[in-house]
Length: 172
Image (cartoon, rainbow, N blue to C red; front, side, top):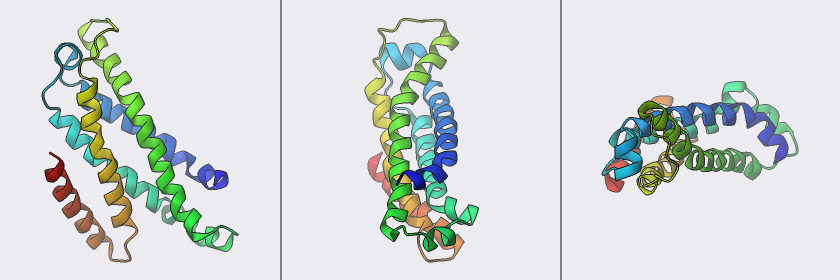
Protein backbone atom coordinates (compact mmCIF):
# COMPACT_ATOMS: atom_id res chain seq x y z
CA UNK A 1 0.00 0.00 0.00
CA UNK A 2 2.88 2.34 0.79
CA UNK A 3 4.30 1.96 -2.71
CA UNK A 4 0.89 2.68 -4.23
CA UNK A 5 0.60 5.85 -2.17
CA UNK A 6 4.04 6.91 -3.31
CA UNK A 7 2.80 7.29 -6.87
CA UNK A 8 -0.35 9.06 -5.62
CA UNK A 9 1.51 11.52 -3.41
CA UNK A 10 1.69 14.20 -6.10
CA UNK A 11 -2.05 14.43 -6.69
CA UNK A 12 -2.81 14.01 -2.98
CA UNK A 13 -0.66 16.98 -1.97
CA UNK A 14 -1.77 19.06 -4.95
CA UNK A 15 -5.45 18.41 -4.35
CA UNK A 16 -5.05 19.05 -0.62
CA UNK A 17 -3.40 22.43 -1.16
CA UNK A 18 -5.68 23.58 -4.00
CA UNK A 19 -8.80 22.27 -2.27
CA UNK A 20 -7.88 23.90 1.03
CA UNK A 21 -7.38 27.26 -0.66
CA UNK A 22 -10.61 27.02 -2.69
CA UNK A 23 -12.75 25.81 0.20
CA UNK A 24 -11.28 28.24 2.74
CA UNK A 25 -11.88 31.20 0.43
CA UNK A 26 -15.44 30.00 -0.23
CA UNK A 27 -16.11 29.63 3.50
CA UNK A 28 -14.46 32.94 4.45
CA UNK A 29 -16.48 34.99 1.94
CA UNK A 30 -19.08 35.65 4.66
CA UNK A 31 -16.69 37.62 6.84
CA UNK A 32 -15.35 36.98 10.31
CA UNK A 33 -18.21 38.41 12.35
CA UNK A 34 -21.00 36.55 10.58
CA UNK A 35 -18.99 33.35 10.23
CA UNK A 36 -17.22 32.93 13.57
CA UNK A 37 -18.97 35.29 16.02
CA UNK A 38 -22.66 35.10 15.14
CA UNK A 39 -22.67 31.81 13.30
CA UNK A 40 -23.89 31.66 9.68
CA UNK A 41 -27.27 30.34 8.62
CA UNK A 42 -26.24 28.82 5.29
CA UNK A 43 -22.99 28.71 3.39
CA UNK A 44 -24.24 28.35 -0.18
CA UNK A 45 -20.98 29.26 -1.92
CA UNK A 46 -18.98 26.87 0.25
CA UNK A 47 -21.57 24.11 -0.30
CA UNK A 48 -21.35 24.24 -4.08
CA UNK A 49 -17.58 24.71 -4.00
CA UNK A 50 -17.26 21.64 -1.78
CA UNK A 51 -19.44 19.62 -4.15
CA UNK A 52 -17.33 20.55 -7.14
CA UNK A 53 -14.10 20.01 -5.23
CA UNK A 54 -15.22 16.53 -4.19
CA UNK A 55 -16.06 15.68 -7.79
CA UNK A 56 -12.64 16.80 -8.98
CA UNK A 57 -10.92 14.88 -6.17
CA UNK A 58 -12.73 11.64 -6.99
CA UNK A 59 -12.12 11.94 -10.72
CA UNK A 60 -8.43 12.72 -10.27
CA UNK A 61 -8.02 9.84 -7.82
CA UNK A 62 -9.49 7.24 -10.17
CA UNK A 63 -8.08 8.58 -13.44
CA UNK A 64 -4.55 9.39 -12.21
CA UNK A 65 -3.10 6.03 -13.27
CA UNK A 66 -4.72 6.29 -16.69
CA UNK A 67 -3.41 9.83 -17.06
CA UNK A 68 0.14 8.75 -16.26
CA UNK A 69 -0.18 5.51 -18.19
CA UNK A 70 0.85 3.41 -15.21
CA UNK A 71 -2.25 1.22 -14.88
CA UNK A 72 -0.89 -1.43 -17.26
CA UNK A 73 2.45 -1.33 -15.45
CA UNK A 74 0.69 -1.86 -12.12
CA UNK A 75 -1.25 -4.82 -13.52
CA UNK A 76 2.09 -6.54 -14.27
CA UNK A 77 3.23 -6.11 -10.66
CA UNK A 78 2.35 -8.52 -7.85
CA UNK A 79 -0.40 -6.22 -6.59
CA UNK A 80 -3.98 -7.39 -6.27
CA UNK A 81 -6.75 -5.61 -8.12
CA UNK A 82 -8.43 -4.93 -4.79
CA UNK A 83 -5.34 -3.10 -3.53
CA UNK A 84 -5.19 -1.08 -6.75
CA UNK A 85 -8.85 -0.09 -6.33
CA UNK A 86 -8.58 0.52 -2.59
CA UNK A 87 -5.54 2.80 -2.76
CA UNK A 88 -7.21 5.82 -4.44
CA UNK A 89 -10.27 5.51 -2.19
CA UNK A 90 -8.15 5.58 0.97
CA UNK A 91 -6.16 8.47 -0.46
CA UNK A 92 -9.43 10.36 -0.99
CA UNK A 93 -10.38 9.70 2.63
CA UNK A 94 -7.02 11.07 3.80
CA UNK A 95 -7.41 14.22 1.67
CA UNK A 96 -11.01 14.87 2.78
CA UNK A 97 -10.18 14.37 6.47
CA UNK A 98 -7.29 16.79 5.97
CA UNK A 99 -9.70 19.30 4.47
CA UNK A 100 -12.08 18.88 7.43
CA UNK A 101 -9.23 19.89 9.73
CA UNK A 102 -7.45 22.50 7.61
CA UNK A 103 -10.35 24.38 5.98
CA UNK A 104 -11.88 25.82 9.19
CA UNK A 105 -8.43 26.90 10.42
CA UNK A 106 -7.42 28.50 7.12
CA UNK A 107 -10.88 30.11 6.76
CA UNK A 108 -10.53 31.54 10.27
CA UNK A 109 -7.11 32.96 9.35
CA UNK A 110 -8.37 34.43 6.06
CA UNK A 111 -11.43 35.97 7.72
CA UNK A 112 -9.38 37.28 10.66
CA UNK A 113 -6.81 38.91 8.38
CA UNK A 114 -9.60 40.39 6.26
CA UNK A 115 -11.49 41.86 9.22
CA UNK A 116 -8.63 42.59 11.62
CA UNK A 117 -10.25 40.62 14.48
CA UNK A 118 -7.84 38.09 15.96
CA UNK A 119 -9.78 36.57 18.86
CA UNK A 120 -9.22 32.81 18.99
CA UNK A 121 -12.27 32.21 21.19
CA UNK A 122 -14.74 32.83 18.35
CA UNK A 123 -15.65 29.53 16.66
CA UNK A 124 -19.46 29.75 16.48
CA UNK A 125 -19.53 28.82 12.80
CA UNK A 126 -17.49 25.61 13.12
CA UNK A 127 -20.50 23.22 13.17
CA UNK A 128 -21.98 24.92 10.11
CA UNK A 129 -18.64 24.79 8.28
CA UNK A 130 -18.17 21.10 9.01
CA UNK A 131 -21.79 20.40 8.08
CA UNK A 132 -21.34 22.22 4.80
CA UNK A 133 -18.19 20.24 4.01
CA UNK A 134 -20.06 16.93 4.37
CA UNK A 135 -21.04 17.12 0.68
CA UNK A 136 -17.40 16.25 -0.06
CA UNK A 137 -17.99 12.59 0.84
CA UNK A 138 -20.86 11.75 -1.54
CA UNK A 139 -19.55 13.93 -4.37
CA UNK A 140 -16.13 12.25 -4.20
CA UNK A 141 -17.78 8.81 -4.13
CA UNK A 142 -19.96 9.72 -7.13
CA UNK A 143 -16.93 10.87 -9.11
CA UNK A 144 -15.01 7.71 -8.21
CA UNK A 145 -17.93 5.59 -9.32
CA UNK A 146 -18.53 7.54 -12.52
CA UNK A 147 -14.86 7.66 -13.50
CA UNK A 148 -14.48 3.91 -13.07
CA UNK A 149 -17.48 2.98 -15.23
CA UNK A 150 -16.74 1.09 -18.45
CA UNK A 151 -18.49 3.66 -20.62
CA UNK A 152 -17.71 6.55 -22.94
CA UNK A 153 -16.23 9.64 -21.32
CA UNK A 154 -19.35 11.74 -21.98
CA UNK A 155 -21.58 9.13 -20.32
CA UNK A 156 -19.33 9.21 -17.26
CA UNK A 157 -19.68 12.99 -17.03
CA UNK A 158 -23.45 12.79 -17.56
CA UNK A 159 -23.78 10.10 -14.88
CA UNK A 160 -21.68 12.07 -12.39
CA UNK A 161 -23.65 15.26 -13.03
CA UNK A 162 -27.03 13.56 -12.66
CA UNK A 163 -26.09 11.76 -9.45
CA UNK A 164 -24.51 14.89 -7.98
CA UNK A 165 -27.64 16.92 -8.64
CA UNK A 166 -29.85 14.24 -7.11
CA UNK A 167 -27.72 13.73 -4.01
CA UNK A 168 -27.06 17.46 -3.60
CA UNK A 169 -30.76 18.29 -3.68
CA UNK A 170 -31.52 15.46 -1.26
CA UNK A 171 -28.90 16.71 1.21
CA UNK A 172 -29.71 20.40 0.85
